[in-house]
Image: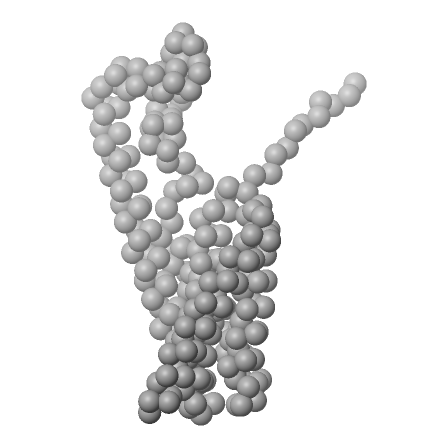
Length: 233
């Protein structure tokens, strides 16, 4: 007797939470630190001063990213908890109305009213809060806010991204800092864009061009400002 074939699907949406924080952190680490280094180097300061500025940018940026992600995602988490508490109270005081509300949601999605009522009743019998959280509020296990995870991921990825331009500063001759750091950072950004797109199942070429363009623009602006300041001083 043949064993029935099980169709297994592999979806990438479960990666949204950490992938967003990781890509954002690494991208920001490369762009902000490389831009800072290029701007300071363009002002014709010493290599040691450039390296010190880059290290300060790494530490400050990592802390800022962690704090910013924690605060913003915590706000999202607080909102989700408040909505769930409100829904829990409504389920306690008006279960029939909540079941009818769930029924209307399924009718709008294409089920006939009888089937929608049956589905709503079955789901309400098993886990009413989970059913309303998912289908009424749009809150699921995948999309649930995780402040600590987002903060740690952002800080770690920012540090990893910022370390790349710093490595270029250490290895590059003082007279070629601007060109070396800019070129290396654009290569890092292109690689990051491709990896992020691959992990998320998105178009790699578009993501690579997008992240490289904005990184090049940021470094060009700061290099121009550094040159102006260097000449003025």
